[in-house]
Length: 144
Image (cartoon, rainbow, N blue to C red; front, side, top):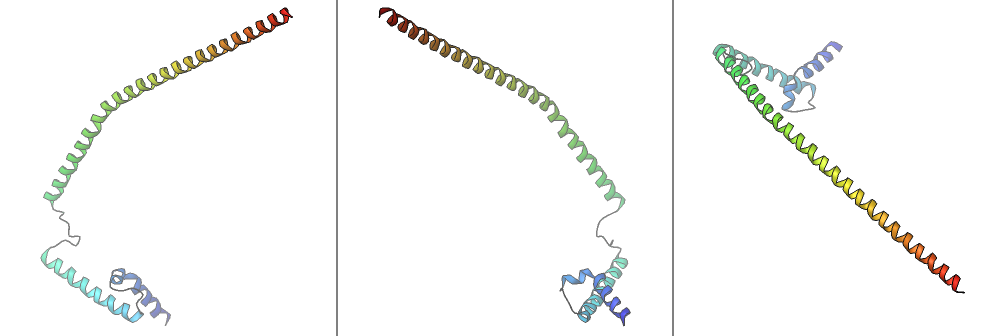
């Protein structure tokens, strides 16, 4: 009894292509669909054998293989050309990028120097005001 259950479940698992027609089938319907699927596959294999059609439906003749190898070589050659050109442009772009960054750094340095000069000017004005105030205090204290 258990061997029949194992055989039935193995039969279900073995025919996953049958599940395209329906899923979660009962055991009997799965077995009958599996048998029909096997018969269709057997007929297809017989026809392929009689007519000489390959099972994979791909042309694997000598001519086709040579044609594919030529195509692969052309593709790899064109890829090599594509990658060779951008490298020279890439170096130029990198040099331009470096120059641009240097210019940005110089501009920052100039802005920092200008800000420092402005800060010194403000400090000098503050000191001048302070000295002027001290002179006024000194003069008012002298006058009294």
